[in-house]
Image 1: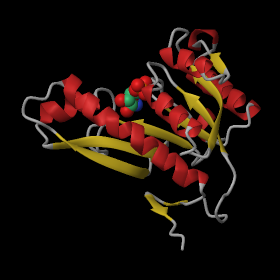
Image 2: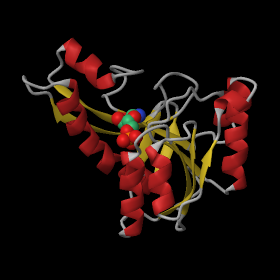
Image 3: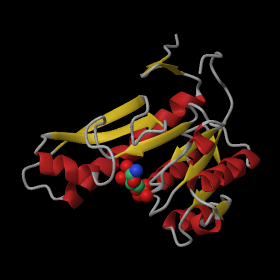
Length: 211
Ligand code: GRF
């Protein structure tokens, strides 16, 4: 964003397909005053996503949008964009949303969609980033928050956190160590956006300095 520093509360729309621990971390940070944001709606493609239950417990509006009710991926993304706009969403947060995001959603929210990925991008994009890292034998793994473009985990990188890979790690133990960092990292990136401190220039995301 290049229009000066924001001061208000950023309105979030969260898309999630699964357990929603990243959503929970964001909710907790908002409720404890560490993140100046409001979640206007949580949308899921899975009727039974635990993320929806988490939202309901905190009085956050939820919406299950069934992909099968839409005529293909584009129509589905268009519907999501409409719902987000209806709820006044300024920043879209993908938190374990297991669907391809298309231009019908990306264009109306250009540079206003974030994703978190459980690997140090550009290494190990796509599914099972943690397993890919283990199989490759890297010594350092981690998490990445990035803006979403039309590629698979290819958008400009906002923030990363590294964790060590231990010799006796399994996919589960490494995933847990990464997830712990994800919960800190995502709110940090959202806070920078809320404060109007993120500037995108091509692939570079710069954090504006304040005095
Ligand atoms: C996380 O590992 C995240 O990096 C990936 O999906 C997982 C979501 O976990 N995009 P949760 O639903 O937030 O617990």
